[in-house]
Length: 112
Image (cartoon, rainbow, N blue to C red; front, side):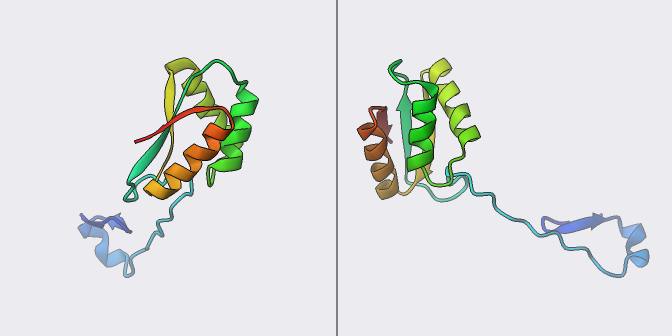
C-alpha cells in the first residue's frame, strides 16, 4: 500500500485503476489553546468557589482568544470538579496578558 499523511491510501494492486491520487487538505482548527504549536507558557485557573459558571464563562470568552462558550463551560466544569484547568497555551507574553485580565476579574490564576 502506498501512503503519505496528506494523500488517500491506495493499495498497489489498484494503482492501475486509479491514475490520479486524491489529495486531502489538512486544516487547523482555532481553539484558543494553541495546541501543537511551540508554546512557551500556559495559563492555569484554580477553583476558588467564589464565581458562578456564567461569570467564569464570560471572563474566558472575553479574554481568551478563540474561546467559545461551550469550551468555556467545559473548562469551568473541569475547574469546579478537578480544582484547576489549563485554559490557554501560547507565548509567555500572551499568557501573562491573559492571566492578568483573568485575575483582574477575580480568578485565581498562574502562568507556568
